[in-house]
Length: 110
Length: 112
Image (tube, rainbow over all chains, first blue to last red; front, top):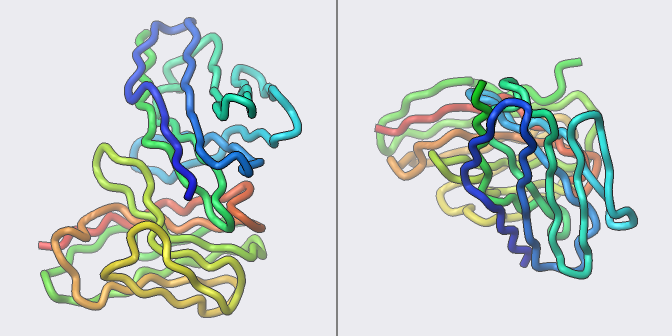
């Protein structure tokens, strides 16, 4: 089955700096890679996703890059703001379901 | 548009009690999922339903049962709660195969 590993588990950045979270996956047939943001006491919320036919996708301050050969994908947050503080999860599909990484707790220090 | 609605939001059970967690979605999605999230851990899949009328086990199904009541509703039942089932439970739905999955706000369950 699909195995998704996510690093780092915690990330502390200064406001205005960039944050990068990396995930690796095992199933070469995977073709959809979402990123979720979870704020305290809330459910995960989809913030960006990428399909296997593109290498990069941007949405304002967030971007996701995909390297299918190496089987890894990354989330990039630029110009971080305090409201970016949250737990971020990557995921990859396994048949009809999603397998999630272990999560990264991001703290943006003002 | 409510999205995915879970009830209850909080619950305390005694060991051995039973209860059903309810989930409903109004997005006409085919697939629905139940995950559990333990402190400091990621999301682990308990059961899922790829389409109305089908259910399948996920990574951690022991101690749980599910029912896909109709296209909108997917319930999770604990027949005999155990302290190890203390967790936050999330329901999610997607059109298919986990693509663009939406999550509910969660049910925080404590078993004492």
